[in-house]
Image (cartoon, rainbow, N blue to C red):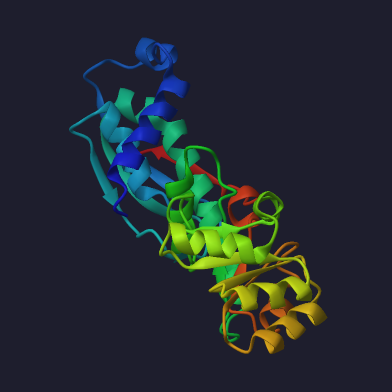
Length: 275
């Protein structure tokens, strides 16, 4: 995961939040030169993600710490499993415990939920995409977790992708006007959000490269797929759940974006055990 700068930024912010002026309990009960080792455990089935971030937490507290990964980000574990070992100053291990586990549990939860969606649409040809509905400050890490779960990353930020939504259309007046202005401003592919089949026709006529079919019924999605006939990439979004995602995929859309991957994933149960 080539996000060293982002990793360090979020790690130092998280440690500042958790440690404050100092870990009073650990500093009072553990000698400053005492060393030890511990295992990080994923205590339930799931997809592992967040090991690099956990390592960065301990390294921020002890530059000489040894961190051994026992699995890799993206690996699936079927039950309680030691995923890493850490050896170094005991104060660093105990002080960094909660921050490291918070990252590991959160990112593994996102990766695991993503894998469930990916498995649900297997064989349909549809890809599962994330959205920008991420935890502020943690987007790069959470999108890495989606990728570890087998999903695909949508645009990372507003500067690397175009998506014309309802409010943009209200500002410009029409789909055609919005697409025309964007063609003059950028060479990026243009995606237009469509709530109705009429808007699908308008977006096609305007030359949009991709259409986001928002909150359409299964029948409407099938009609849109037939209407477009491969002339634009089709992304379904809105109200997607594990219960209906396969039916959506079987309409023939190319992609399905799921905000729940990052805004509703449950953190997995993780722990650190001193050995």
